[in-house]
Image (cartoon, rainbow, N blue to C red; front, side, top):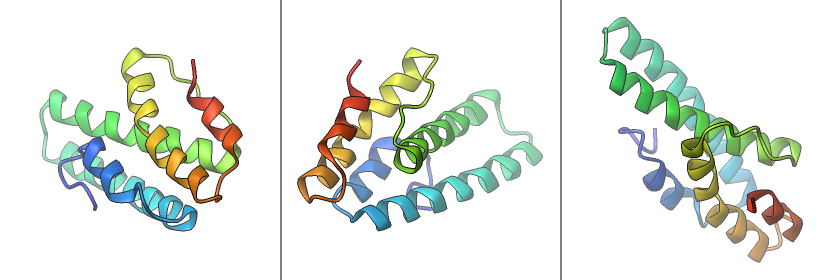
Length: 111
């Protein structure tokens, strides 16, 4: 896992300057690792706060993967989900600057 403590900012810092293929691959791998972590933590009877923090991180990863794979903005029902999703704009902007994504992708970050 890139961010063992499920810190979204740390994860984004780690992938911001990577190629599209690397971003997608690492985000998918991180999501799978977080799925495993959630199962492990639930079996350990982790606190509700810890489970929610891990789940929130997982949702943020899935929202960004959804955008990359479908080219559509995911449903973001809560303010926190919108905040986490908007953090990925840096990654998308970096990919646009390198010509790996079309500039229109940035429209999916504007409210």
